Amino acid sequence: MGTTVFKSIMAENFASFAERIKFTCIADESKKEHQLNTFKAGDETINKVSYVYGANGSGKTYFCKILREIQKMIALSPLSMMKNSQIKAMLQNEGLTKQVPGFAFDVKYRDVPTTLGIDLIVDNVTYHYEFSMLDQKVVHELLTKKYRRTEKVLERTSPNFQDILLRSELKAFEDTKKVVKEDALCLAMAAMLNNEFANMIVDAIKNINIFNMTSPRLNPGESASFSDERIQRYVKILRKADPTIRNIQVEYEEEEIARQKVDSDDFENREIIQTKTTVGVKSKHALYNDGIEIETGTEQIDFFRDESLGTIKLFTTLPHLFDVLEEGGILFLDEIENGLHPSLVKEMISLFTNDESNPFHAQLICTTHQPLLISENVKRDQVWILSKDKFGKSILQRLSDESFSRTKVNLTNKILEGALGCNPESFFNIT
Image (cartoon, rainbow, N blue to C red; front, top):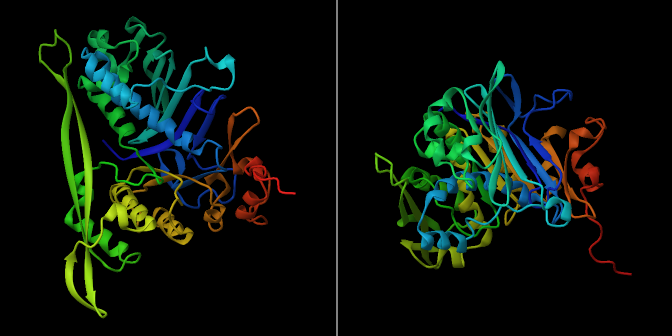
């Protein structure tokens, strides 16, 4: 599979997004500065970095959860065939099988499906995938591909597998589609049963990295992210924050938590195996006597308990940064400035806009409270504003949709002035 390029994402009746919202990384070519911080993918000009700015409670975390929900539904669809009630109860307790959240503050949305969708470019072909859920059932599913012309590959019009139409590369799944349950995605089931095309689309979606900067711990990742060479790079960077660090050791522990046969009639006797991976970190520090280092590699502190918040945040972010920068890919960072100095965050962002540090056109999509991040060399079409109205509905707008001259207006000041209603009202009315 070639490098995946993120094009757009959409949601309707999901969490605080009552009305349909759509976010895109396609550059606005109507603006003079449209080629700054961009690259070409097929016929599209794509922004390397995009910012989603908003006040507290505006919906920034839910914006990232759109992608997380798509990934979760893909990952959990094969579990629909599990007959083990104990395993299902365990997954429910961990929040993995909870209903997709719709908009909660207006009764008219209770009978409206929640729709999520994503557009990706792989090897110059654009793929659009979306699905709709209502009462934990898949009521709609659509996959199209576009190369010169648009072609439907999968179309589903009800929870019943008989209402699934398959064409082109998914036609081979026709005789097996009966395994698709009403609460499962057809695309995910086809991938699980080794349809090569479905696997390509599913892998492209699953490989998008999402990280919440409020998380205090590492997400399990590939072991290559913690190779000896990578660790040395991390330590070199971390020593700018904590000069006593000499080495870091990362330990993986994986355990099997569930095993279930695909189907009693499955001739190949395939199984779904669920595993849980935990990551531990041990740091080695220097020990001094009157300013002279007398010992190296001593464990004086518990890394996650005693190290500074900023150092922990930096360390937990580094694997995600280098994974996409070294190979190409997409990284979502929720609250990118959380626990980090603004100058450090700007330096991290510059890694994506610099062709030397980002030779494979990795993309960064970040949510933020910090308007200072867009003070220099940022285009209007890279900035999106989230705001929430008095009815609890989150509204997403692109800063380039507002009519003003880029040469005369500082984007940071425009944000601070409340462009597109991005600033909240006063929380404390002190008279």
